[in-house]
Image (cartoon, rainbow, N blue to C red; front, top):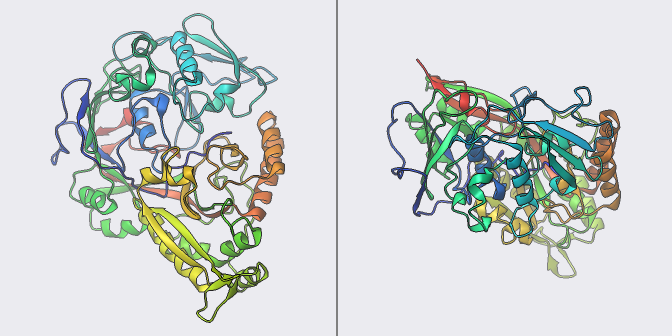
Length: 544
């Protein structure tokens, strides 16, 4: 029921580049500045956000909207690059030992930092938390997911800085998920601003969130081109040293690289194959980050013949995943066989999907009735075995994977047509390629969170179950794992889930990405975590 945020991932850089009007909380921002404005840090987004209100945050392969939301809004709890919990908006992480988490896991006490204020000077209080929770659950608001929040039976404010959530039943990921990293991350919103902007779906705040409690304050948004944020002088940790963030919308991977080389960007996520082109740039350094990004080929089980497990296993056996890791990612993205990141305590290295075995793939396809014709291509009852592979173009790694997988499947007699779309076309709710099921195979990067809950992907009716996969045994195990307070018991349960899914093959898992961030050596404090590069933007500053 959570954490698979279909990802900011191996996908590198994303889409959406239409010109439009500027929305601002102050002055309009000029078009993509070619030179540094004094004190500014410059970076890019791979696509244009659809919305700047965190309430309506959409997930995509680069977590674009979450990256900018984190600039202006504080989560309850964040994570440092080593995966350690950091209390942000709350003064401490609720645990049984400190009395803020009940023994049955159903009552959680969050203690807000009393010194936090909104950027307009108004105090952040428990009333803001209650207001935001009601907004999330209000059916009139087109919130992408209520997961986790719909398990809150009752919420109460105990004074201005204490909020208590009473859950309907124990939910293991709750502490690190609610108003923190979850399947659909949410942030506390300013009640005093949004109460007067109903209906929230049409609120001016959606395009100009000029009041926040994070390190930076929104100034302007020129759609399809750029965003401008400036330091929040009322930030509870103190005003950031970097006084301005110039953010450009650049979906093209090659353009991003050129801008980094020409010193027009201060940091950028790069593909492993791009690093060699930067070796001559002695002013560039690198951060290597183990991520929660697991990329795979999702198989649409609602389309024949992918409803036949023999065909799915044959596809897995036809693709040289180790070769993809070595040739395309230069070994930077290690091969994986499950949705759990390799750093997760729930990861079971003994779980294996069907391994690369072209002869075995041929046998399974023959057994399923798909036999080769004189041209080497497979047919059954006169119908050719043809599949549509959807790939979003804003990822250098993904595009190479598509070409390699297409060639390897053709060697097995499967005709694969690659359909190239934008990141937005792939991930858009309802009408996107994944949501509408308009594909047979699709390259999807999933971003897992700190908790191993994978029910948001593998559950029968899960929001990111793009595969249309349903195994009642997996559903039952997911429910049991989410209700268990014991990490050791949950580890066993997730191992069982991983093993079943590896045999069913709704996803051909490719790799667990270890990201490479290239950054200018004069940018200090740049330490991306496993989930977001902007989580600690308050600590960025330019120095000699």
